[in-house]
Image (cartoon, rainbow, N blue to C red; front, side, top):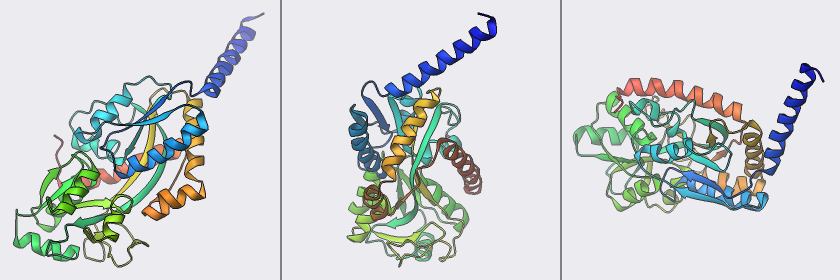
Length: 323
């Protein structure tokens, strides 16, 4: 057998072995880490996905919450995990887009430490307020904040999260001075707004929709290009005269870098099949104000690149400095 034949045989054997490994996946429990406290939008969605995956894979798929430090703790845990698909990350855009601008040093590389699997869903953010706040739209909020300079505050779910970007931009461009109070997750932040502990925040219909419907808080605007079908009476930020305030959220799944492509593709295929089920779309998407995306790894990677460029402009305009 000559050298070329040996090389061909070796490559074929390696390919078969990799394929066999993919077919055997998962061979044990799969842990999906969420870098936020329980109860947030991405946590709710990935738990629904995990139930379906457990049945599909014949192995337990568990969700583990590792909140804190603007998602750095949970993301770092996955970045350091064995790249075999048995440890995954379910997070929002902050981890891969905003954090690179908010922190001088990250424990992970947002471009090199992970393999994108799929963008599950996305939604625009509402500018939220406690019911007792004497402002019923964004224009009234700005007027109030200027009269009561330094007295209003907003909650966020950590440094670099959408609330911080939105209100930092508003402070810079509108001349307000709304103070920042960080929480460990979107659920604690929303609870604080309902309780009146903080005046303001932002959140998607996926996490704040029910609280808006039951009038536990109010929406002053939606930071998107169009009004929400679920809340058509809430004007856009552009309609209120603040077109530069654009904010949304997406929920994505990632594997550690160097996870075999066959494994990544299998996880993608199985998760996107779940996401596209009509019953899932209605219960976890439409009814919660979320648009299901369920894209391919390459498409997801390109989306991250585009969002990073847009966020860079927002951070520069707001003059946010890395800490």
